[in-house]
Every structure is written in structure tokens, then in C-alpha cells.
Image 1 (tube, rainbow, N blue to C red):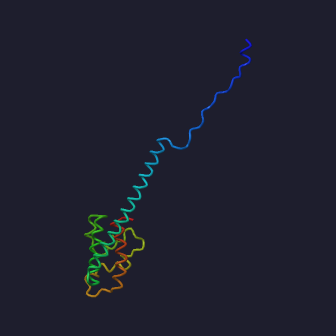
Image 2: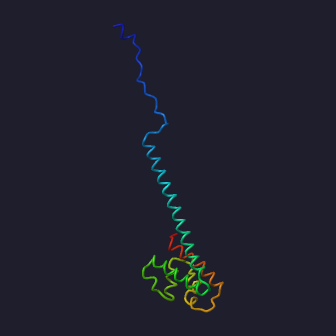
Image 3: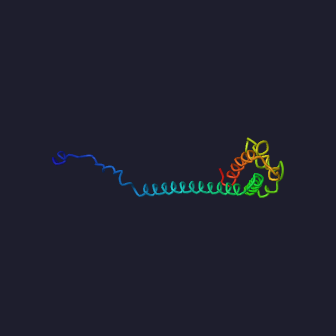
Length: 152
């Protein structure tokens, strides 16, 4: 009976906490997935930027190939009609004010109906189109073409 009173009892020992390195396999998988998503986003952004650059080169080379300001206006009109078909297949059949209103459909500044874009109505048929007006139209048409063909 004496033996039971001399035993020293100790509490249960907890094992040490697991080390933070190396992480568990789930953390490696999570890091791999996050890295793949980040790489995919970088790839898509670079691809979108390259597509936008190629579309800008297409616009600029087509307009620069036209020898006179009147043919440049005609080239811009053709390119805008091509881009309009991307938004609405029936848009290339619009004429006059309806065509200019369609070009301004998502623009608050109304650059086509009340600005330099009005040159599209008759600029391609004029013998001597004003080069400054053609330059202003080019900036407006290029911006609309890029917006519609490459997206924002």
C-alpha cells in the first residue's frame, strides 16, 4: 500500500507543433493553381495587347495606302463598316444620319453626328477634302475601330 503514495503522476504531454516548412501538399497544390491562374492572366493580357496592336496597324496601313484625302475617308468608312458588322450584322446597310447615329451609339460626345465624323457622309465623294478635317476624322474613326474590333 505504500507504493501507491510514492508514485509521481505527470500530466499528458502534447507533441510539438508541426513545422511551417515544408508546407503540406495541399498548400503546394494551391500555390501551383494560383501560379497557373496568374500566368494565364498575363498571357491573355499580352495576347489582347498584341491583337489591339495588330488591329491598329491594319487601320493605319489601310488609310495610309490611300493616296488622296478623299480616298482616305472612303477607306475609313469601309473599315468602320467592317467593324460595325462585328456589333450588328445589319449595321453595314445603314446610310446617312442613321449610320452616324449608329457610330455614336455608345459615345456621349457624338463625334460622328456633330463633330468631324460628319465628313463620312460626303467626304469620300469630294474632289478636295480638307486634310485637317480628314486628320480629325482619322483620330475619331481609329478610336471607334479599335473599340469595336479589339474591345475596350
